[in-house]
Length: 511
Image 1 (cartoon, rainbow, N blue to C red):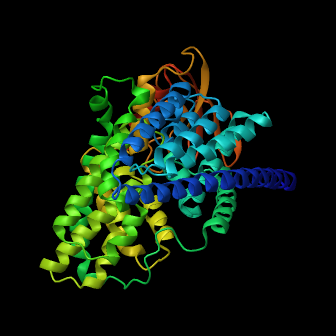
Image 2 (cartoon, helix red, strand yellow):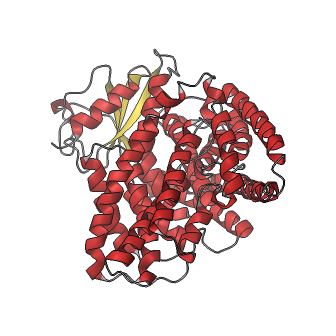
């Protein structure tokens, strides 16, 4: 017993060490990435202010934008997996549905992300940061020729470190890996991700300062008498979140009608952003400055509605172009605008005190993010860490829950999972005859909990080879009883892996 405990401790110390290395490298890399984007966006805004006095300079800017779009297009053509946010690619890599070499993706994503987000497109830095961190973890595991399970742990910890450095939200970064990427709890993944996130966040704080990314100052507690308004807000955000999901997934249909190759779709947003930057330079970027200004400046309902429509439409155009950029921050900014819209309406027509507007802005960010990502815990903690206040945890949880129920009843699925399904269906990445082992968790709502192995009708083309329970591997027999928190290791081939996962999810949920 003591020997087993000693071995377990040594294993955890080993992963703490490697998680620390991943956190240091990812923290430095993502902080440079974030700093470069912020400085570049500032310079671009100054250019548009200058161009308002000398509009002829816009011709030069348009030509430069075309060159940048073509260059990014060639980067995407060389490494297709750098397109978009990068989160679906990381999930696919962990599920062994996608395979790519880490260094070309890291290099091209770093350069392409700066060139795509820096000019002021409505894209976020967090998705690319997650993929950059995951590539660091993948690279470290390749350097040490790590076994497959260790590769996945280091990739997960790198992704967590990337998100932590991008938003200074280390706890939300760990929750994102557990809730959104793996959908199950693994002590080693949690521990390694926590170490890498804390270290990466420390590096980012050293560079960017201790103030939270979306610090809005002191907030009053929202009285319970306004929870009826929060119920309406949750329903409102759930419906609009489902609309966002549908529109985002339909973007390829619209862009495929363009008479240009898909790697060069970036020409469209990089040219369309020029008139936006010329007339509204303060609206450029992922949206963090917009969130900070919503409460400071009084906006009419009409102006907020126009702002939402502009941000919504152009964020769709920006992301649908396949440029390397994320949707985290654009989603949060859209949620904040919806919160301000709802808050101003409540102030003008329902008697809400004006100083509660800030509360609705913050609460709506979490609700809208939950409705689109279907990751309520991540949304609640992410917004809490980004605004630097815990006063709103109860209303955040309430609205997130309502939004989740609404979008679930409307048939919504986690957006990154849907994007991964679409990505895998478009491409056959791996050799269809290659055998792989997929991991499937036994959760509390699964019919497998308490069931003997022989009583479950397993999908075709599968073989249950092992059960991982409490950090031990169990060789399964027909009379082996499955338990909650077990991880099933199932042998199949790459051609059936996606369908096997889908069948298992469908067949094991309690009806």
